[in-house]
Length: 91
Figure 1 (cartoon, one colour):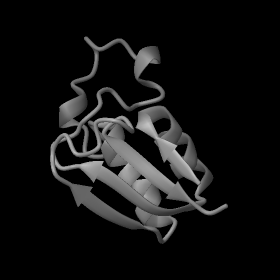
Figure 2 (cartoon, rainbow, N blue to C red):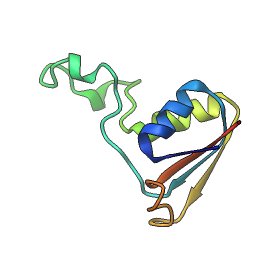
Figure 3 (tube, rainbow, N blue to C red):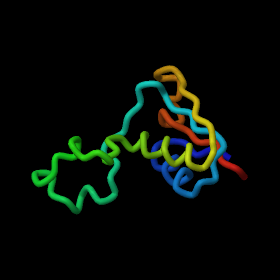
Figure 4 (tube, rainbow, N blue to C red):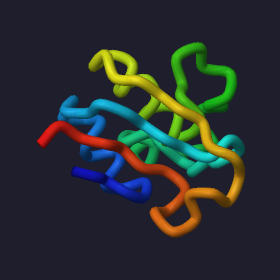
Protein backbone atom coordinates (compact mmCIF):
# COMPACT_ATOMS: atom_id res chain seq x y z
CA UNK A 1 0.00 0.00 0.00
CA UNK A 2 1.19 3.51 -0.73
CA UNK A 3 0.46 6.74 1.10
CA UNK A 4 1.27 9.72 -1.09
CA UNK A 5 1.37 13.41 -0.37
CA UNK A 6 2.03 15.14 2.92
CA UNK A 7 -1.30 14.40 4.62
CA UNK A 8 -1.44 10.67 3.81
CA UNK A 9 2.26 10.31 4.69
CA UNK A 10 1.68 12.07 8.02
CA UNK A 11 -1.23 9.75 8.86
CA UNK A 12 0.74 6.63 7.94
CA UNK A 13 3.73 7.77 9.99
CA UNK A 14 1.57 8.51 13.03
CA UNK A 15 0.08 4.99 12.83
CA UNK A 16 3.57 3.48 12.62
CA UNK A 17 2.75 0.93 9.93
CA UNK A 18 5.47 1.99 7.49
CA UNK A 19 8.25 0.18 5.67
CA UNK A 20 9.79 3.01 3.68
CA UNK A 21 9.57 6.77 3.31
CA UNK A 22 10.68 8.34 0.04
CA UNK A 23 10.92 12.12 -0.15
CA UNK A 24 12.49 14.59 -2.53
CA UNK A 25 15.83 15.99 -1.45
CA UNK A 26 14.74 19.61 -0.90
CA UNK A 27 11.05 19.06 -0.09
CA UNK A 28 9.71 20.93 2.94
CA UNK A 29 6.21 21.62 4.18
CA UNK A 30 5.57 24.26 6.83
CA UNK A 31 4.26 24.44 9.56
CA UNK A 32 4.20 21.20 11.54
CA UNK A 33 3.24 21.89 15.12
CA UNK A 34 -0.23 20.65 16.04
CA UNK A 35 -0.39 23.19 18.82
CA UNK A 36 1.09 26.03 16.82
CA UNK A 37 -2.30 27.61 16.11
CA UNK A 38 -3.08 27.72 19.84
CA UNK A 39 0.01 29.73 20.81
CA UNK A 40 0.23 33.31 19.52
CA UNK A 41 3.27 33.56 17.27
CA UNK A 42 4.26 36.91 18.76
CA UNK A 43 4.82 35.35 22.20
CA UNK A 44 7.25 32.60 21.23
CA UNK A 45 10.11 32.57 18.80
CA UNK A 46 9.70 28.97 17.64
CA UNK A 47 13.12 28.70 16.11
CA UNK A 48 14.76 29.41 19.46
CA UNK A 49 12.96 26.49 21.12
CA UNK A 50 15.27 23.45 21.37
CA UNK A 51 12.64 20.81 20.61
CA UNK A 52 10.63 22.63 17.97
CA UNK A 53 10.42 20.70 14.70
CA UNK A 54 10.32 23.28 11.95
CA UNK A 55 9.01 21.21 9.05
CA UNK A 56 6.28 18.61 8.87
CA UNK A 57 8.56 16.44 6.75
CA UNK A 58 11.08 16.35 9.61
CA UNK A 59 8.35 15.17 12.00
CA UNK A 60 7.36 12.44 9.54
CA UNK A 61 11.04 11.41 9.23
CA UNK A 62 11.30 11.14 12.99
CA UNK A 63 8.18 8.97 13.31
CA UNK A 64 9.30 6.76 10.44
CA UNK A 65 12.67 6.16 12.08
CA UNK A 66 11.03 5.49 15.46
CA UNK A 67 8.96 2.74 13.86
CA UNK A 68 12.09 1.10 12.42
CA UNK A 69 11.32 1.90 8.79
CA UNK A 70 13.83 3.15 6.23
CA UNK A 71 14.11 6.54 4.56
CA UNK A 72 15.23 7.13 1.00
CA UNK A 73 15.87 10.50 -0.61
CA UNK A 74 14.94 11.05 -4.26
CA UNK A 75 16.09 13.78 -6.58
CA UNK A 76 14.06 16.97 -6.78
CA UNK A 77 10.85 16.77 -8.85
CA UNK A 78 11.10 12.97 -9.25
CA UNK A 79 8.07 12.50 -6.96
CA UNK A 80 5.97 15.37 -8.27
CA UNK A 81 3.06 13.08 -9.14
CA UNK A 82 2.67 11.52 -5.67
CA UNK A 83 3.03 14.89 -3.95
CA UNK A 84 6.82 15.02 -3.43
CA UNK A 85 6.66 12.47 -0.58
CA UNK A 86 5.37 8.91 -0.27
CA UNK A 87 5.27 6.16 2.36
CA UNK A 88 5.15 2.46 1.61
CA UNK A 89 2.94 0.91 4.27
CA UNK A 90 2.51 -2.62 5.52
CA UNK A 91 -0.70 -4.06 4.14
